[in-house]
Image (cartoon, rainbow, N blue to C red; front, top):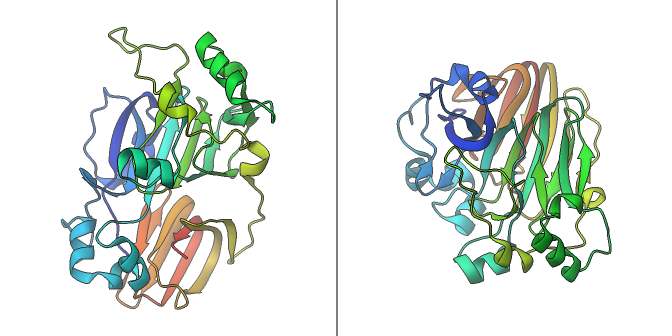
Length: 326
């Protein structure tokens, strides 16, 4: 099978800006330039937001329809056995002109109990950051208690207890479920996560929408979801990219992420994987080819390599993130 591309699904958010429109400009999506977009769902199998294929034989079909017909050939036999027709990851691009809410996601057990759902562990890769831009991950005090946190929520001082970290392009973080977090304005990042849209909003920086309304908070739900020990040091991932070599950034129960710096050309043998592979281009441009065809991938674009493609060739000059289920 050939490299598959998708139509991005743009999402409005109060904290968004116009950078996503520029990043996705060449991907032929319909947008309202008067609206503010914070997220692009680049590959999604979530009900109501299933990605539509934009190229080749499958063009016009959605991802679930392709999996229904080709099953393990698309996602991998073991992946299909575990997840069936549900695509097991959600890949997003986020641009924040303003801060996102301070929030937390439940783990698998709590999400199953409350929502009949999986939990949400995610990973962030920073594409760009304005000088001084920050992420907020965990708490400043590593010994904070549940009671101290509840007091901060009641007093409206949550912003004072969360830990800021200044970031730059290329920084990467694994954000396990239970980790309190937020993203400041001036950050564009790529997020890979478990396939669920499930967030407990704790604090929203006292802002209101154009009608003067505050967004809903989920403070009672959140307190039982929080891992008070999770912090920046535990979440930050250190790595050193190497020319034409896949370097691991994150390996967890839900996905693996490598970075691949292509200069000229490289061949990837994927025969040991029983999984699809997603490639996200963060810089430059490359041609990705299988035995069945090739596709050009530019900054802000994604391709899915079906599981039955054992070898691929990549040529050009580009930085790619490589995701799969291990």
